[in-house]
Image (tube, rainbow, N blue to C red):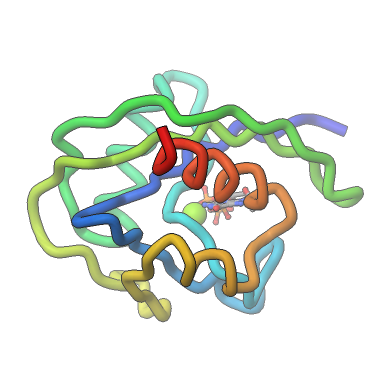
Length: 131
Ligand SMILES: Nc1nc2c([nH]c(=O)n2[C@H]2C[C@H](O)[C@@H](COP(=O)(O)OP(=O)(O)OP(=O)(O)O)O2)c(=O)[nH]1
Ligand SMILES: [Mg+2]
C-alpha cells in the first residue's frame, strides 16, 4: 500500500490549539484533527501546509517549526504525518469548509476523539510544554 504524505498544522495561540472535525465521509471521519492535507508532488511540506491552512481554515501561515513525523498504518491507509507547529499566522481561523472547529488547551486535546496516529502528536505537545 502506498504511503500518503500529509502536512499537519498545530495552530497555537496562548497555549491553546485550533482543531477541526473531519466530515463523516472522509477517512477517519467524525474524528477531530489538526488541519492539513496531502503534500502534492511539486510541494514542500511547508508549501502544502500553507495551501491547506488557507483552504480549510482561512489563515495565512507566517512561521512554522517542525514538531514530529509519524508513520502510521490504519490498515486501509498508510500515512506519513509531517507535523508543524504554527505559532504565527494572519487572519482568524474558522471552519471554512463548514466543519466544526474549536480552540482547546492541552488537557482538552487529551479528551477529544482523534485518529490513532494523533496520540504521538499530543504526547509531543505535552513534552514540549514540560521542557
Ligand atoms: N489533516 C489531518 N490528517 C490526519 C490527522 N491525523 C491523521 O491520522 N490524519 C490522516 C487522515 C487522512 O488519512 C490523512 C489526511 O488526509 P486529508 O483528508 O486531510 O487530505 P486532504 O486534506 O488533502 O483531503 P482530500 O484530498 O483527501 O480530500 O491523514 C490530523 O491530525 N490532521
Ligand atoms: Mg485535510
